[in-house]
Length: 294
Image (cartoon, rainbow, N blue to C red; front, side, top):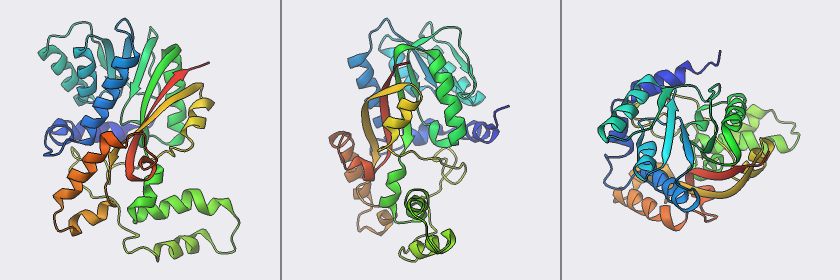
């Protein structure tokens, strides 16, 4: 039995106001909307209308619905019953035919048919590395040869830009293991922490509908090494795009004379720097577009 009950419960609880906070309650467009546009633009340019698409972790169905409205055949599943119900109601409301939505777990799902495109949004950052491995394996089974795989990840390099506990975690995960030290890991961690004013502070915590931070453990991915990771599972990366930019380290926002400028300037980066080197450090999330090669 795959132990993901905590993830299921979180998104069941978050489902009621999820769209309100993630898509429709921002004076500046949300990172979720930016992500949706990046995916839709890529699909329209690279995927034929005869293709069949699967959205693994479809949530409230916003991405799924936007693709279906463009005339693509798309199915979806989610780990949360409540999310599935919301997605199904949207499809019914818009009278879109041929869409199958069901409850399932990305680590153990099976389909009777293979898909031309598989989309996985906002899922992998909540899976341990062992669960990610299982997810890759199931995805590979469901994807046709040369099929397109689109996945979003949390960016582990972003920790260097936050100057908080995530910066300390970056050193602990990537830098300390490079060498053997006489000092213990705890001492090294303490010394790094002493250089930061907010070494024990993480990202802001909000309601479950606003964020999963503080409610679920996060498992972030290195955008510099994701190409090799994908290749090890039989996928060849074709493109990488960054989103969810931060114009300055997040903790500075409330110290600005005009905090709203933080949101305005961050959003201004979304389209301009989606493929820039700045994204490796200033964007919290990124997308990979890959093809199944074996």
